Length: 296
Length: 214
Picture (cartoon, chains in turn red, cyan):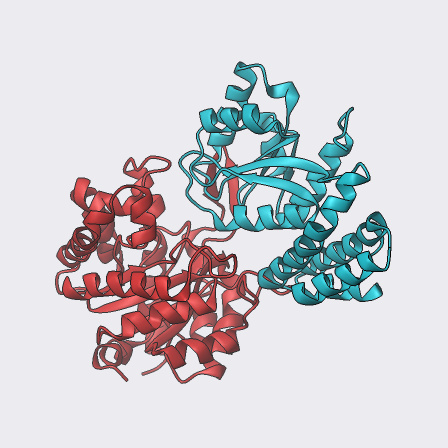
């Protein structure tokens, strides 16, 4: 196992962070703006989000680089600033983390799809290599491939990230099929575990797509299908629309109430995705203390 | 020709093409192929997708097989007085650059017999209006993935109204955050929670028109 991952897992579960997009919106990010651009235009506001998670108890924080790939940046005429945006994203999270948290840099989906022929595998590979290298050069501790719906795209991204020599987390969205336990393209947790591991992921997992209750069974199946540590970041339940804005009904306490079940199912890294806030991370951190004592 | 049903349902474009060519050569009526074999197969593929028994790649393959067959049949259907069942202008609204869901809906609409004009992503109200003038569609279909950009649909509908084109087109909306309530609220004619529902809604909207295109 990678030395950093091994060190973190000495006190499993490791607490990661919550959502960034909604936090940035609260700071004034406008509809249609690309959050990643704020690494250059409003670094202090981004730093505030990162700092809030560190203060809430995150031991691993991500970076505001989810969409900083060539396809998305091109749509905002920011293609030329790709390296700069990714570098600033890592630096901002690093400054907020200090020596209290590790910085795992985020790589999201390309926004293009292989199955409809929007993009080729070669084009995706090049794009992921470019972003992964920019993040690695900026000094990230690890790379996180997240919110992937297409296992083939995820494999390309994981392989590109793995080539930097950094530890890699690869995680998929499971939100489709009769039991909401498949990816959009129809892959099961078992297939995802095998493919992500083969592509070089040091940690595998699931994020986004549904509320936390559905993640217990998925964590269990990932655990049974792989010897890799498991990364879990669920949404705060399902959103409800109120005056055109998404609102999430789940409270931090009820979210954190699932942590023991997730740990029992084999989750090693736990945080939140859409709708979660620093208050959710606080609640998880409070839950974690008794869970840890149970292992002594 | 029963094989045509299987070819579309299993998403085998090569088989669909071969069987359609053979059927045309042996004089089977084109409209019969569409109504008795292809459309029911596409409907079954859609039903399986909705039930969660098959997934996006399979649905796209079925739509592609359907489109392949339709391309062969269309010239014959035109000469018999029937062509595409309707024309749809589709785009992701201003501020939203997500094209995957929109592309899937476009493919399924094409599989369902519509002619689809894709305006791409981040489409401004002005671009929608220009496309209505240019293509004279029965339906304008708008997509949004983000809760923060879905209000762009309302702006577009108001802009279409402001230039006096609202009665010339039906407005169909869709995307992850869209609900029927929202569709009603902003004055859309119908909504689809997914590609299959969007096709059903598009057909409903067409039937509601007084002068359907032939």
